[in-house]
Image 1 (cartoon, rainbow, N blue to C red):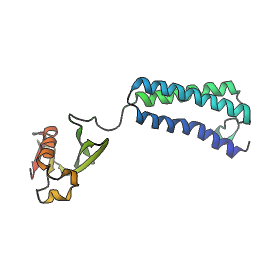
Image 2: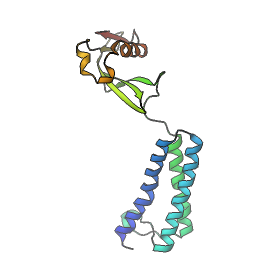
Image 3: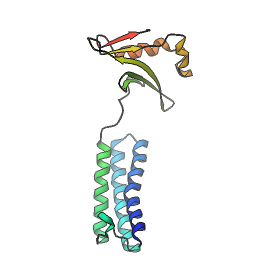
Image 4: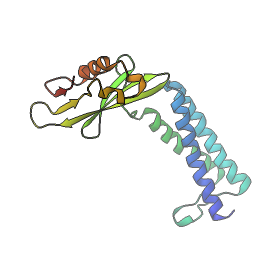
Length: 183
């Protein structure tokens, strides 16, 4: 087997299962299902690595593309256990993004000065960027809410809901740490 083909196969044997697990993890929120999926995918990946070594004569490549002589059984364990460890870390790892607040909405900081209001609708997050500014003093941020006439520049789903959205943001970002303008 050519060295470039062997290297390509090795990358596929590592990246393919990781991408598959990322897709699987996004579809299920259940930890037991994720753990079972991780175990099955790790075993299948180890078996595939051993099968490629046995039937195609593939051997993994090390630094500088040198072939590493390894038995198919050792490859099964190396790939299976190695990927299982990666999958477990991905299963128990901290989820990115803030947790939703009550009612399927959340408010967070984005960048240095802005706030991000998000709410879940039809299985997707939709968002508004609210301008703000860092301050020195008792209040460390000021939030600039758009006037009613400027509010029309926001998406259609936010129209007619200015007071509701502002109230939600104020409930999360409260004085004395925050000041508001235009509310």
